[in-house]
Structure formats: structure tokens, C-alpha cells
Length: 315
Length: 52
Image (cartoon, rainbow over all chains, first blue to last red; front, side):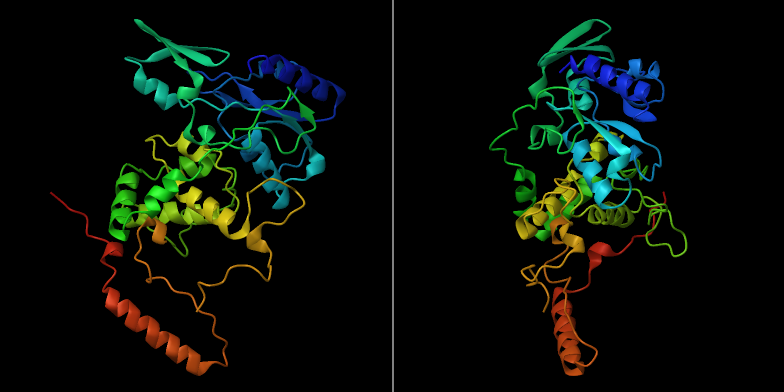
């Protein structure tokens, strides 16, 4: 996976030199360990800063919304599904894009590593299948599979669904993954227990909206939480307002969420708000046989009508 | 909604044409009775901020 970096630089350099694209969106090393940041390369020289490792968790489709120029974009499985969603929703045209597909083996969860280390991590070195975190007076090695982001460990679409270039041979998809164990465990609870569970889950939320900003689906010019006339939801930390924000945001992602994990990753207090979007994802799969972002030719279930659509809930 | 702890039955859907006045009355009565049985939705009331 580490060899991807050279190939990405080579492809990006070639695309920029030939003028096929005006900009390549990818990752560069972040200023702190395990935090790669988006990189917008506009010249072949800029493209040499592109990297690839296990800390490229940000969803780059987020940066495509309403762009007008020709863009090359580095895309792992989930990014590519969100690019498809963007194309379906007319947020970018397929012709504008050169998708540099990256078969992905999952991203590591920086919190899992930080929690297991005794102090501040100053350097993280990666080799195939493992990462080593070093800090003042300690050095610890982790198997990558033990510290994957939760959504990555459940991922069944690691390979890009659309691509014009591919940096490596497709990787084997994970088989027999139980994607919805957490949704089922919540569904098994009584309404009171569920209410309590969500209350505890959201209690640390400070309404910073990092989850919304990191999400490639949240591209509304004015988000409902920012509107003042009418004011749909209170702006403070009242538990009911926090809850309303989270479940309305989740609803806006119904049938669109690819479980890329950008929201959870961006959260400064580590809330797993994916329990909401995953429930909707599971419903879409169960009721409509739909998984978001797999094809640019199929309209999503929420903007099409089929006679066999379930409607038992309407009396 | 039920997934995050709202009681089953508190949220109901119906399709009523503007010409179906009797169905409208039926459904409203039915829903009102069902919701009264569930009691007030105290989960969703806002509390005044606690000041020391």
C-alpha cells in the first residue's frame, strides 16, 4: 500500500503536465502524526507532495461540490461511491473528473492508537500491515487490522467503483462481514433504553458541526441548523436540540451515506454518530435493496417510485 | 425515530385525500386516542437551564 505514493505522484504529474486536469486533489502529510490533510496540486511540482498511507481517512469527494474545472481526484472505495453520489445529484459532471482509484485496505483509527500509547505520539511509521507509534520514551507497534477505523473493518467496497486510472491491482473484498451488529443491538433495546443510550452517546457533543463539515453529503449552501428565519432547531447545547441536529442530519443522508466514517473521524469528542446513518443504510438495503453510490446510471430509491415500494406504514 | 428512542406509535402516517372527510375524522380520532394512551411526550420537553 505504501508503494501507492509513487504511482499517485506519477499519475498526478502526468495528468497535470498533459493538461488533462487543472488540479489534482489528494493527500499530503499533515503537520501532526496520523493526520494527513487534503492537498490541491495545480502544478507537476506540487504533485510531488502527494502521499498515501493509512491516515488518509478524509473523504475527498467533499471538495468536489460545484467545482467548474477539470479535476483529478484520488479516490479510495468510499470516496469513489461519494463521487458517484455527487454525479447523481448534479454536483459535478463525470466528464470533469479523472478518478485516480486507490484499492484501499482500510484506514487506522488515530484514537485507538493514541489510547494505547502512554504519552503524546510524535511520529508514526508504517510498513506493510503494521504501524509503529513513537513518542517520548516509548515505541509501540500495532497490527493494522487491530487499529482500523470501525467503518473500515466492516467495509465491503474497498475498491473504487469508478476510476479512470488505478494505482494498483484491486484488493480482495472482505467476505462475510456482519455490517449491522450495532444497529441490531440497539434495535433489541426497549424504547426507554434506546432513549438513554442516545442521550449518553450525544452527551459530549459540543455542536461544533465538524461531522457535518467533513461529510461529502452535507453541501447545502445554508444548513438547517444555521438558519435563523425560520429557526428550525435551537442553537444551544440543550439535549433535545443536540438530538434533533443529529437525527435530522442523519435523515438528510438517508439512501446517500456510504459509511465512509468521515463524520466520526472528524468528531473532536469521539461520538459514534454512525449509529444513526447506519440504521438508515440498513433500512435502505432491507427495504429497497439499495447501497449508495455503486452506479451512476441508477437513480436512488428516494427519488424514484416503484409499485413494489413498501408502504405498510401508511394507514 | 423509534431507533433513537421515540415510543412506537407516536409517529404515524396516513394518506387522506381532500375528499375523504370521514376518513380524516376517523384517523384523527384514532391517532388522538392512541397518543393520549401513550401520555405526554415528556422526553421531548426542554428543561430550563439549571443555575447554581
